Image (cartoon, rainbow, N blue to C red; front, side, top):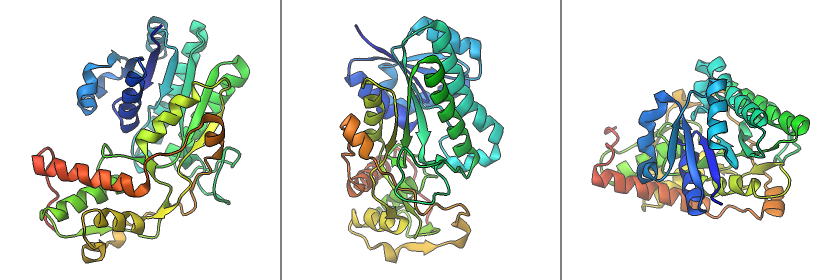
Length: 329
């Protein structure tokens, strides 16, 4: 029997890679997409013709109940969230409703329809926030520092409560920073890859950066969606920390990206103090040993390979005219 998987947030980076994975596994993939998000379906490229789209307001409990009742999915992947964390300060309540509200309404729909659907909640390393110890694992306390992280934590515990109280198969992946060529330019990884490609092709000469000492645990989104899928294939639903376990600084990021095209970053990078963030996390790094032990999951693409892929993709986009070059600085 063909399995049906529902995905919220299908037009995002993770939604794209997860759809690709599930289609290759023979799933029927259905994206739950709000009406105002319909234009974003172009982000799926050729995948848009291979997945089904169910138009539904994620804030409407009755509409989501109807969707779950009609589609009767074996798996639900709830990825719905604002993609850019700092934006959550501009609309804390809307962020809470999109993240926690959608999770709650979907879990309630599964419960009311009486399905044995397996539910994945996209949690985030942002929930760890102001950490006292590194690396972090599944037992590390949450101390969120922004509205996005607080909403993710609320959704996470809502999922846990539905599992404990109602016996639902519900789990979450606490994912660290995961990147790809699909990232928007406001993310530092894509900002850097696009700038390096633009400099290499002579469209611009410099890249403005903030704190080069900030550190992150960066991985490849295509690897991380496989962890999501594996979480729903095991016998017991549990939480899993998903990351590389390796810290890299923004300086490493910049140097590696420039090096991939044979350039010295120090000839092109300018420090702009206006780009320094107040809430930098210096110790957020994963301990993914549980995922390796229980799921057999390990990241496949290295930090260097990830950046080389992102820069190469932006070079191809610029050369083909698919995207506009950065303005000359």
